[in-house]
Length: 210
Length: 186
Length: 181
Image 1 (cartoon, rainbow over the protein chains, first blue to last red):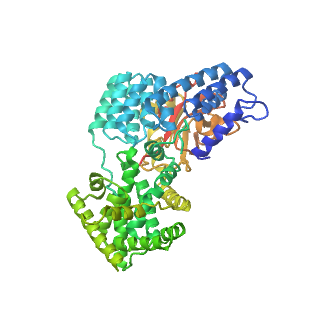
Image 2 (image 1 turned 120 degrees about the horizontal axis):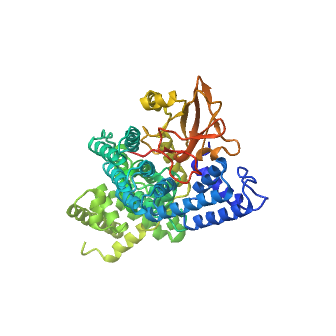
Image 3 (image 1 turned 30 degrees about the horizontal axis):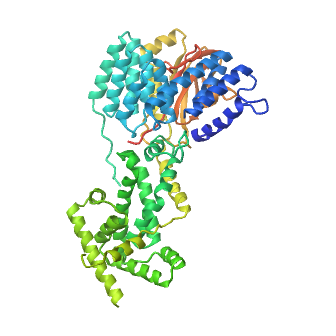
């Protein structure tokens, strides 16, 4: 499978072609989108580029919509939502956020997490770690009914305590299973977060500084 | 390397991208600091080959430890500290091998092309005199006068106290004065 | 230094401050080393997760789901025993496993393969009702879903839900990422 960088470049090229005239079309889209849909999507992509938002996630949303049998207007709505969510995430996180972080942050925004909360987490964690997975887990537990502030506090506490991605992944699975067994979502998230923060993680090996 | 808005990316933005897996973004940091720090390495080690090796080593070590760069906005200063240490290690290896301080041939070539022979001789004299200094004195002199750092910055980079650094700079100047006056009077 | 003319010191410093230019091959040599370092630390394999995937199917919740004939989905490679920088040039092998004894076909589609458009769907192989397929997935966050019998969209019950407009169908989130620790 192509590297993400190569796919990103190819995406930019194909986006330029995908929504333009018949002579240059993305073979994956083919003739499946009508002219008004293409025009609307093209405008959204241009707007995203102007705002410094990665375009690849928007194309992925188009492919997803086509694969799932959605019509043109439905796809445009979905892409528009994603553009707005990524723009909000970008404003909150700044230029230092990676494309994957923005994509995950947009999921969290969609789930109802205020962008300012995400910005707070990014500032707290600094540049040393990616928040792609923490944002993904945040979106997930909110979608399972954990109140937004409880969820944000839990993730922020985990990140602040130096929890690694695998620990946060374990936290997500534990909360999910607890809720499926009938636990109240807020209680499940608070209890599991407390346990994850107070249980010390094994210390990494000390490496030579330089 | 430009960000999506067309502006040149800051060190912090480039560091973030590298840490997120965009290894190629590190090339922009290499280009940004290559020449700036090559000068120090060449004067400290006395020859271009050793200087390039130390600088390559510094860039590679900086990449490996990038997650531990606490202030990515000051990546350059952090990298420079690594380079200063690499030059110390390289210098120590040269002493053990018994190598003498060799002149920077390229600089001499450039000097001779731009200036008459007298300028080239003057450059040779300076290089030779630098080579006569102890490594500590040469390091302190270069950081203070050539790289124009303040004593606090020098202390942060070298780990040596300000008083000791001032002493080293003073002794370096005294020694250079004697060496170069001897040449002039000779 | 009082009797050493300022002019002499200035002349020395001026001489030493001449720029030293390295040619561009220096950058290439550094990046060769950097990429080698990066490639050496790239995580490989997800063998450790296969055990976790099998044990998950033994949990009461999933056993009940199986008994009801509901597709139980187990996704391997969700996350990280990885603790190194992941290369942009190096996708990570991920095994997708689906226990679906009643299915006639199972495919995996998602952001990493353009949702199966242009015949890119990952077609799983059936081994006594256990469907599996392995594929290299680039580092990043990906939405994906299982497509059973060409028409039923199934999310992974053991993976985080993908949040966002999903056109009324369920999907999951897969994060393939490593950080230097």
